[in-house]
Length: 188
Image (tube, rainbow, N blue to C red; front, side, top):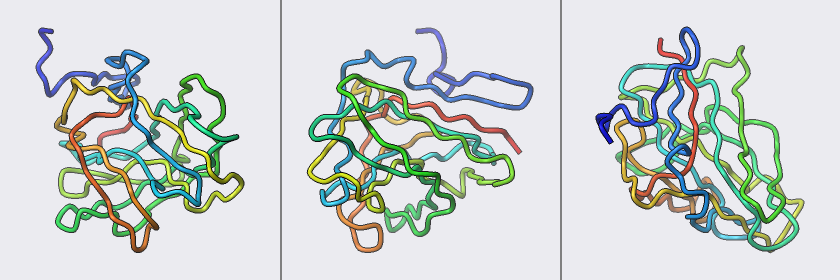
């Protein structure tokens, strides 16, 4: 691959819109246990997004499939990442509930409404994730998320994260494996 590491997966998709697409390097098979219904342990899975320039987040997506049960409800979130304490300090934006159904990997996406300006930058990293704690329609269900084991941290995605326990009291864990995702953003 002749493309420099810091440029991998980054393309301009419009006059001002840039897309970071790690899913293009995903084999469609490798995955990690990702989300559990509201009564489970892992209540959020996502990425830390720390772009090299200040930007406005347009949207993001992950590839998920149902592993066990009838469905896993989640809400997309953008959370302020407090790196020193390795946790989301607050939720900056929350989307409408969605539901993971089906045994085949499906791309679940979220577009931040244009009137909501959610920003990120090198000094203001955020977590882009799917969060299940508030969705109580299913119990004892779980899902898997696409992951690229050979692709470790990228400059704009220094780590992937998951939350064990509740948002207010749980433990956030970071790891270098990169999730199969797309992030669309506009540089400011």
